[in-house]
Image (cartoon, rainbow, N blue to C red):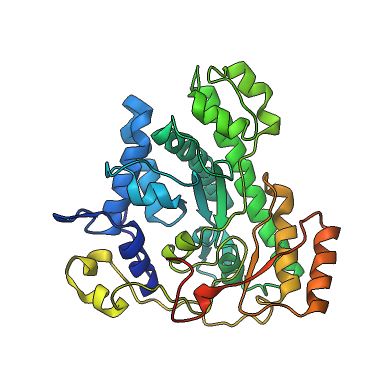
Length: 356
């Protein structure tokens, strides 16, 4: 049986309320975030036909545990009938949701579950692509993304700038990649004629493939398919209990820029049903998490398991000095990454937010 979703960060409740909660002139339609998950999962799973209830339940189970998240457009609009769902098609895996502490006090990553959810994320993605089957999707191509890796590393008691942390990040990315490949193979195997749009964008993201793409053609192209990507999803990272986006650590503070106070929202009516639980976040300040070189090396650690080129800018409170930028550029070149681009993260600087 599915358990209710728990928020542990008040900003995450506000993020849901501002960006993803369905409301109409008649009032709130999503009373809780679990209503949001159900709305989205049922809309996406509907393309599965008779198997829709089974897949909807699986999607909801993973969503409620913060193990995967829909892309922003689907999360806000699927099942609402409020127009075309624009933007990227993505499913984002939250690595932090797969770390737990044993009775012995030792934290570990549940790799089997991680691979299973990554496979489920591909199924969800293929189904979500068909919500707007006749529309072109924005770049990058539909993909399975990652967030919460820095949080998982912190939960395992590792310094962000350590070799051990980078090795752990690589293992997490490898498990996600393996699960995604398995999920795509299962999806193809289960569909005698896979939906043309899903197969086109999953296996041939940069090619003009005929809409009558066949199973044989899909299978022959399987080795060149692009599935995983490391692209920014800051709103999802904030929603998922304020996790770090991609392989970066979460900002120490984020100003949402909403129309009301978080405290007021948490105490007011239906918003109070969001099940906010004020559990403490990790209180350890990792001295290595803001080191520019460490951030480049963390991307290098997962690079081998990311299908699409990693080219997102690094968001920083202040630009690294010229020597640090030159060192990072050399590290990137050595590891086959693009030359780093550094952008000031205005979401960390009150009172305005880059996320609105």
